[in-house]
Amino acid sequence: MNRYIFITAIFALAMLAEEAFAQTDADARVVEQTTQVVCKNKNNATEKHKVVYEILNQKGKEFADVSIMCDKYNSLSSFLGIVTDASGKEIKKIKKGDLNRTEYSSEAFATDDYLLYYEYTPPTYPITVTYEWTEEMKGGLLGFPAFVPQMGTRLGVVHSKYELTAPADMGIRYKAVNMPSKVEEKKNADGTVTFVAEVNQLAPVPDEDYHVPALEMLPAVYFAPSNFNYLGTSGNSSTWEDLGKWQYGLLDGRDEITDEFKASLHAMTDTCTSVRSKIAVVYQLMEKTTRYVSIQLGIGGLQPFPAKEVCRTGFGDCKGLTNYMRAMLKELGIHSVYCTINSGKRRNFYPDFASSGMSNHVVLCVPEASGDSLWIECTNATLPLGYVHSDIAGHNAMAVDEQGGHLVRLPEYADTLHLQMTKVDVNLAADGSAQLRVQQRSEFGQYEDLIPLRYADDKKRKEWVLKNLTVPQATVSTISVDEHREPYGVPCMNVTAEIDSRKYANITGARMFVPVNPTHRTYSSVPNHPNRKGKVYVGTGYRDIDVVTIHIPDGFTLEALPAPVQLKEAFGEFEIKAEKINDQTVAVNTSLTMHRGTYPVEAFKALYEFKKKVLQQYHQQLVLKK
Image (cartoon, rainbow, N blue to C red; front, side):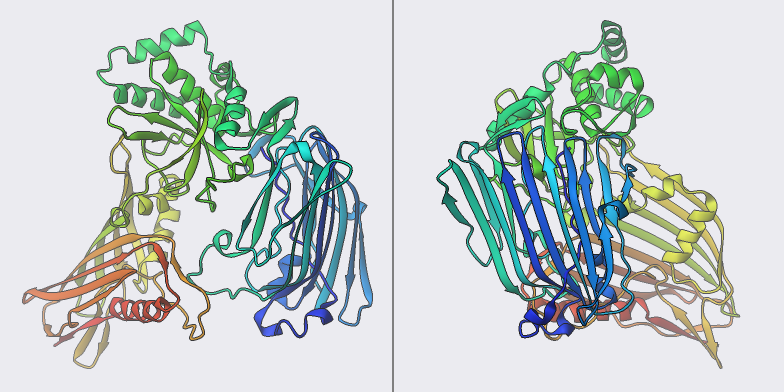
C-alpha cells in the first residue's frame, strides 16, 4: 500500500485574514501551513509539518483533530500541539505522548501501518490549534505527500507553502491541478533540486448542493520521483509504461499453483464449451472457497501474496485474489491482465503523470476476441460476474503486462439502465385504511443500493420498507427479497411486501383524499442558492418508474385526478399521468430520469425548480366523493 497521510489539523492567528474572508463564508481558516520535505537519497527523507488553523464554529470542528499514518519504515520523531483562545492565551498543550495509537483498520486484517491521532473538542469558538511534527522515512520513496492547501469546502487559506528538495538524479515530476500560482523550481549547488508551491488568500469554496467533486475543484500539486528505490526494489515511473514494468516485476513467479490444484481445475472446466463458461466456473469457485481480507504487508502492500498461499489459506486482499484468479485462468489457457485502479472518488489518472499513489485497488481484465473486455471484481465474488460496479465504472486503470503499463477506461452503464421499477396495488377501504402490495425491481446501480437487504433479517427488511415508503400508520405483514445475479446477466433485486395502513387516505366530510405515489419518501427538493458560485454536478444517473393502481372502495366515486405533467431539462425528465381505468380503478404512472454530468452554474435555478416540482407531483392526491 502506498503511504497516505491524512492531515486533519487546525490553525490560528486569524487577524491576518480578517480582510480576506468574511466569517460567514468559512467554518475554519488555514492561517499558516508549511511542509518541508528533504529527500537525502532514494531511500530516506525527512518531512517537517506545521499547521495553524483557526476554527470559527462547530462545523469546523473536524480541523481540530490530527492524524498521522506511520509504519515500520516511516516514524514520527517529534510532535507538539498548542491550543489558544481568541485572545491568544494558551489553554492546551499536546505532546507526543498524548497521541493515541491504533493498528485497527476496518479494511486491513494484517498491516504494517499504525495511526497516531489526537481528537480535540474546542470548548468555545473561535479557537486556534497549532500542530508541528517531523516524520522520518526510510526504505525507499515511491512518492511524496501532495500539496493540498484547501482540504474541503468552507475552508479559507491565508498562507500555505510546500517545499521539496531531492537529488536531481531522482527526476522529480509534479502535476499541478487548479493551482492559482506556478510551482517554482531551482537547482542547488549540492546537486539537489528544490520545488516550491505556495498560495495566499484563497477564499473559501462554498459548500453548495450538487457541487463538483473536491478532487476536480480544489487546488493541488502531486509529486513523484521518476527513479526510485522501494523496499529492496528499484524502478522508474517517468511514464505509465515504465511504472507498469516495475509493477509487473512484482507479479513475477506469484501466479504458480500446485499440480494437484491444476488437475482439479481441469476436471471442473474441461467439459465447458466456451471461454466465458470456464471463467464462470472459476468465479464460482472463488466465491465458495475464498474471502476478502486486506493484507498490507510486504512491499508496501503493492505485491500480491502468491497464488499458492491464497489457494491454501482461502483468503486474500484485492491483489492476492486478483492474482489468484489470474493464475487459475492462465492454467486454463485464458489470458487476463492485472489492473490497478482507484475504487472511490478518483475516477481518472492523469495520462501525463504516472504515479502509483493514484490507485488503491486491483481488478482483472480479460480481453475478448470481439475487441471488448470482460472486467472481473475478484474482491467481492458475490457481485455478478462481469458486472462493473459503481465504485470503478468509468474509471481509468493501469493495465499491467509484459510490455509495461498503459491506461484503459472501464465501461460505464447508461443512466437509464440504473432502473427501479415499482408496482403498487392499493386496496382502499371506506374508512381510509388500505392494504398495499408492493413489487419493486432494482437493476444495476440501484441493485447495488439494495445489496445490504440480501443479508438483513425480516425485521431490518421491514424497517427499510417503512423508511422508504410514504405509508402512514403502517405495518409490514410479509416481505421477501429475491436476488438475481447470473453470470454476465442483468443484476437485479426484487422486493415484494404486503403492507397494512390504518390511515392511508384522509377523509374530510364527504371526500377522501388519496396519495397517488407512496414510493418516494426519501426524495427531497434542494435548497435554493440564488448566488450560486460553482457548476452543477449530477454524479449519479438513474431512472425510476412507478405504476400505482388504486382501487376505489364501494360507496365512493372519482371526483378529481391529478393533471398530467411533463418536465424536461438537460439533467433530467419527469412525467406523471393518471387515468381512470374503470369506475373502481385508477392508475397513476410516473417516470423520473436523471442524467449524470456537469452543467453550467446557470443550470442550478432550473434544477431547483425541477426538483421542487417533482416533489410536488409525488405528493399529489386524487379526490374521491361519497
